[in-house]
Length: 522
Image (cartoon, rainbow, N blue to C red; front, side, top):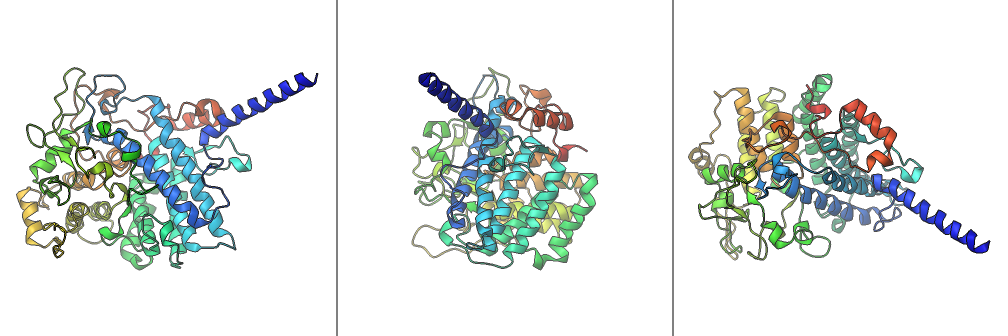
């Protein structure tokens, strides 16, 4: 009897663990084993940032870049992302990673709100990071758990899915609160912050720049457009001093990889050297840079053995790429590709600047579009030129005179400098006021495409919103030749949260890559 009792008890314990794991796996939100919920705010920030940027970087490489023709895998197999076809299991990684880090950022907010460890800046930073992750979640999947997410400790293990519109409107509230909290400029521990090294003002400017990114994303929806456009105008023109935004590349939100400890690029930790250099560069991506004679690929950088700043190898035909979307069996031979670190001592694989969250250059193109549409004062041309210049100088700060070690710093170009004017003219890039609005949108978004290089899935999100830049469509594309509109929900969600999953599908549409999210629907 005693033996049977213990056997039954053991079986029940094992069963309870298995069942709870199913629930935990749905959100992976209960408890991060590394970060206890009782940790101090300064202990929680860096690991959560590293975890989020790592997930973003890895899916940028093998998902965003393949869809957006930055790279093209040389594959004749099924489920090739560049052919608009991918396995459902690709959805799990970002969902799990993002919800896990939301738990950490929410714990950060809780600890920063504790009277003993109260810190308004950490509160504001937490709200910015929560908004950033939730925006990526909903832009990737559509309707997702939001108001009830990350509440497994409170007993909510089957959270409801919320409509994207409602998620966005609450994100805007979070960013408003963050702006207010950060206005206090309460000091934070510099070593806890691998993005801005404790500069609270830069966190505030990033939060408001992110706010503008997200306002623009939903600006095409008639039910919110008037309020959204009014908010953009308020932030940029009417109350600019109350909503500071990025003012230079120094304000760009980048987690800089030092190569020491946790601050080692995921391209080193998670990608083998031979795999990093495996995909070909897409023809669309390299052709423009080549034809523009762009400094990012035509200037050998000191300390890189003569390699250009983006670490792109030339093939037998120089800078040449592979056309995306080819029919299986008809692919071209690989020409250009990204060097791996075993080929060049420093390449993008271990470059400190690849942990990009948002750049000043992207912000300038946001402002250019808003000015083009008449929502804010200022010149769309000037914003555009500033974006183009800073897209170059993000990678080459001293352009047009990159300096070798030991020489005096050079003066970087400005939009009025002869070097930059010559670059625009020789590349046939000069702004033309006679173009139609749609032609100007293409001009803005082609440059924005390069400004968002390595920035999580932002190229894909913006293409889905605008249709720009216009990408060539190869004959081997699946999904009816239409850019996938979303990732499907992770497969395990169907069994772990069946009722709310079915309600989400009924509200949003079929759980398929062809179902557009709310801000795509007109």
